Amino acid sequence: MRTLDQLFERSTRSLAQRTSRRSVLASLGQLLTGAALLPLLPVDRAGRADAAESKPRANGPEDCQYWKYCAIDGFLCSCCGGTSASCPPGTAASPISWIGTCHNAADGRDYIVSYNDCCGKSTCGTCDCVRNEGEKPIYRPSRNNDLNWCMANADVNYHCTVSVILGVAEK
Image 1 (cartoon, one colour):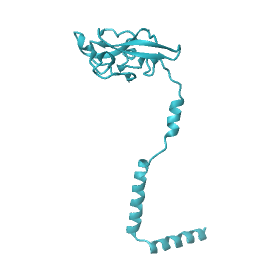
Image 2 (cartoon, helix red, strand yellow; image 1 turned 90 degrees about the vertical axis):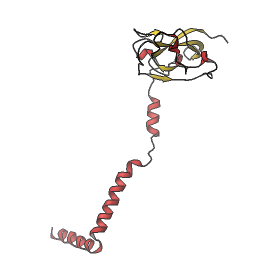
Image 3 (cartoon, rainbow, N blue to C red; image 1 turned 60 degrees about the vertical axis):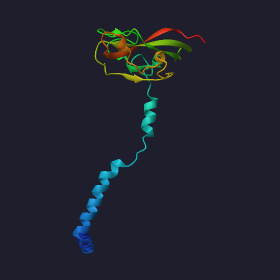
Image 4 (cartoon, rainbow, N blue to C red; image 1 turned 180 degrees about the horizontal axis):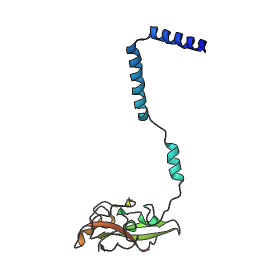
């Protein structure tokens, strides 16, 4: 045990002769600064993205990627107390709407879908879904989803949006 003590004593004395307190404090400060900056370095998160893509999707009426939401812009009524085609209680569908043509991969057909805003309550705030596939400029209002479609109702407060299938699109 004595040789180990002597070894540590010699190495400590040698270190003390070669360094000062200031250089030790400077080195310690550099080490702490480097440790604080470590989280700012770039990190490859591709593995996390691949894991997220491999998860199965529900792809139902509460999912923004549901096929008949191809031109929707708003909160899904299916998450706000209604269904994908009917307004929640206490709200009324706007008589004016915008339309889109959505492809249903399950049966390989295209459908004409009407998007109606449900009005009369404050904004739902859940399941926000913005998909602008086939959206036309504002000069074609029936194909644009950026208008307040509740303007035709007595109560212009927007709550959520439903999508109603009007029919099969003919080619």
